[in-house]
Image (cartoon, rainbow, N blue to C red):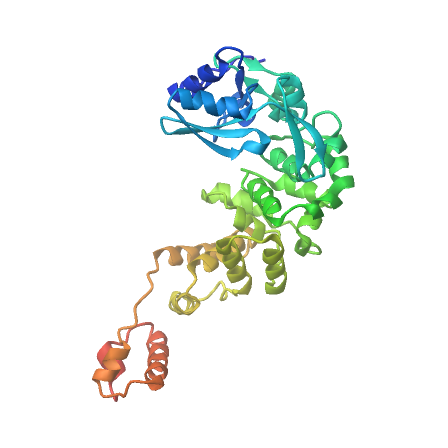
Amino acid sequence: MAEHIDQPWLHRPQLQALLALLNDGEGEAKIAGGAVRNSLLDQPIADVDVATTLVPSEVVERLKSAGHKSVPTGIDHGTVTAIIDGDAYEVTTLRADVETDGRHATVVFGTDWEADARRRDLTMNALYLDADGTVFDPLGGMQDVLAARVVFIDDATQRIREDYLRILRFFRFFAWYGKFRPDADGLRACAREKDGLEGLSAERVWQELSKMLAAPDPVRAVLWMRQTGVLSKILPESENWGIDGIHPLIETEKERKWEPDAVLRLMAILPPMEERVASATERLKLPNSVRDRLLAWAQLELPAAKTKQEAFARFLYRTNNDQAVTDRLRLAIATSDADAKKRRRQLKWLKRWQRPILPVRGADLIAAGMEPGPAISERLSKMEERWIDSDFALSSEELLTGI
C-alpha cells in the first residue's frame, strides 16, 4: 500500500517554500485533502490546500515577514490564501467544531491533527501529506481511496446533520471515485436525512449537483440518488420522468468523443417541458447562461429526422440558436436508435453551417425611395421571408425589385 507520494506538483518551489515557512519553529503544516487523494489515484490535481497548527494571524505574519502576500479569504473559519511568486494556496488552521446547525459550523482552532480529520466528511478527504511526500492517514482513509470506497467518517447520520450538503457530497464523490455499490450506512443515512436538504442555499445545491454531473460517468450516482429520494428532493421536476436517458448519453459521449457536459446531462434527467424547466432554473437560481440554455432547449422542437438539408438550413436560420439545436440533436442521437444516423447527419450539417446574411438593409430601402418609419421594418421582414424561402439565393437587386 502506498505510504509515500512523489509527484512533480509536490516539488514546486513555491509550495515547498510555503511548507518550510509554516513548519519553522513550533509550527507544523501539511498538504490536506483532495491533492493527497487524487495523487494516490494518479488523477489530476486541481488545487493544493494546506493545513497548519498556526493560527491565521501567525500565518499572515510569517508570509508578510518573508515578503509574500496573503488574502483573508475565510479568516473567520481559519483560512488564509497565501500567494507566493504567483501561486495561490489556501492555508487553513486545524479546527474542531463546537456547534453546527446543518449549514454552518462554529469552530475553534487547535493543534490536534486527528481532531481536524474527524471534523471532515469522508475518510478519503481526511488525508495529509508532509513536504517530503509522507502520507499521514489518521483514520484509514487511504485504504478507502485505493478500494474506491466512499465512506463517512464515524457515524454517517451525525456527519450529515452537521452539514446537510454532505448528502450531495457523498453522491458527488461516489460519482468521481466510487465503484460497486455505495456504502450501505451512508446510503441509509442520506435517505433518512434528505429533508435537511431543504435548508440549503440553492447555490450550494447546484454547485454540488453540477460537479457530480461532470464526473466521467455519474450514472450510478444518479441512480442511487433516485433510489434514496435525494434526486426528487433537489430536483422535483424530474419526478415521474425516467432517468434512462443519461446512460445512453454517457455511452454516446465516449463513442463520439464528446466532452462531458454537466448541463446536457441535466437535460437527460429533466422533462423537456418549458414549465418544469423554468421551475427548476428559478428554484436552483442557476447562472443566467445555464438558465437560458436550459430554457432554449426546452422550448425547441427539432424538425423531422428525414428533413432535407435545405429545409434544415431554413430551420437553423429561423431558430438562431445553434446551442439549443446541438443539445437537442445530441440527446436525440443518444436516445433514438432508429433516427440516430439521420440526426448525426444533421449535427454534421450544423457544424458546417454558416449563418447567411440578408443582403438588404433599411438604408437600401430608403435609397430606393421608401420613407423612413415602421414600414421599413415590415418590408424588410417580408423580404427576409422571401429570401429564406429561396434558400437564401435571392440577390439584393432581386429583393429590391418593385420598391
